[in-house]
Amino acid sequence: MPNWVEWSIFEEEVAADEQGEDGVDEIRREDAPSSRLRLVPRLLELYLHDCPKLRDIPQQIGKDTTCLKVLGLRELNNLKAVEDRPVLSELLVIENCEGLERICNVPQVTELRVGGCPNLSHVDGLGSLQRLGLGKDMQEIPSCWMPGLQEQHQRLHGEDLDVYTWL
Image (cartoon, rainbow, N blue to C red; front, side):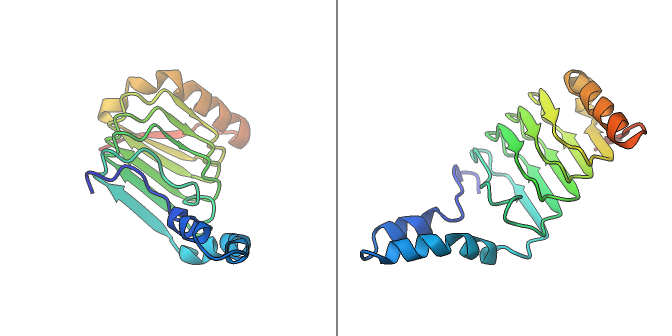
């Protein structure tokens, strides 16, 4: 999907509501949160690949998807940040996302693998992180954020962060 620029799971639903009859859109908006959860309640893994123009991932992915364990992002060159994904619980894989600058507030992720992200300059809020896989091309880049991650892991878990070469 090389031309996909924007993704909103619920935008069409809200737009349709606004054109509805008087009173109908109010009821639908009140029901919206429960509808959201019904759309992807059992989503365990999500992989997005080759969407170079995609700018963001809907906030519902990693918030309302309470079963989501794995999020894989590959070749999303316009993506600037992966942040505020409180329920993503196991693995975050980010590969060849050249525009990525930040990974923040993904507190339940236990393993992060990053490669091909030369502009990644800020990583924090990964309190459950146990393993960090860095691509060979990333060996020099994390010097600006690696010490903070290692210090946080040592403080929270009393041991060194497991860092390995990936790819």
